Length: 318
Image (cartoon, rainbow, N blue to C red):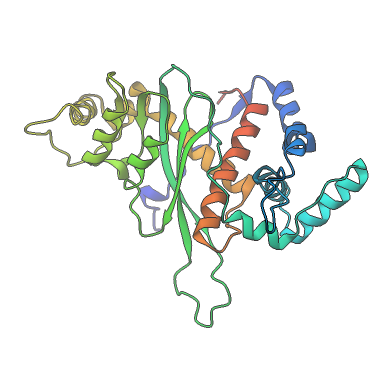
C-alpha cells in the first residue's frame, strides 16, 4: 500500500458564519440595481458640451462610455448586446438619450483616461496587501496559436481594513511579481502602516519602496523570507524589517509567526482575487494592451462599488 505524500494531505476546511447577514443580503441585491451602475450624474453628463469648433464633434463623453462599459462588465454582455440593452432601457424610460454603437465602445475603450477607482485620501495610515494572478487573453485568429496559454499578470494592492482595491497594474506574464510593486505604491495617496505579501516579494527593492511610503513613520513589512535566509551584515533602515522577521520566525516558528505578526490577514487579498475572477471573469475581453489596462481599472472600480454596498462580517465557528 502506497501512502500519500505529505503535500497530498488536505487540511480540514474551516466553517464561517456571517454576523451581518441581513445587511449583506441587501447589498447583494443592490448589485443588480441599474440605478447603482447608471446613476443620474452619468445621464446628466452623457453628452459632450458643444465647443463651437469646426469639424466633427464627439457626441458621447467619457462618462457615457464608462457607464456603458460598466453595464457590459457587470452583466457579462457582449458589445452588441450592450448597445441593444441601453437602447431598450432608453425607450422604456422614455428619455432622449443617444446610445453609442458597439464599434464606438470598442474604439473609445482604448483611449479612456485613467479611471478613478480609489477612495478619497484620508489621514489614516492603511494596511496594504499585495498579490498577483493570471488572466487569460484572446490570441485572435492566429494560424499558429502559442503553445503555452496566453495570459496577462494582474497585480492588486488591497486595503486590509475595507477590502477595497487601492492600486492595480497589468503586466506581461514574464514580469516578476515584485517588479511592479514600487509603481503600485506610487498610486497610493495615503501613508502606509504595513505591507504584507508572500515570499515572492522578498527583495530589497520592496522593503525600500515600502519604507519610502511611510511618510516619516516606520512601516511594518510582513514578507516571509526564505528558509535559508540570513541576517544582513550591514542592514539599512528598510532591511531591518526583514531581519526582524527572520529573528521572529527562528524564535516562534513559521506558523506561529503568521498568527502573531498579523501576516495571516494576507489571505484577504486572495479573497479579492477570487472575487475578481468570479464576478468579472477569468478572461479579458479586450485584445489590445491599452484596452486591457482600462478594463482592469474599470473592474477594480466595480468591485470597490460592490464592497461599499455591503461586505460580510464573518467569524470562524469550526
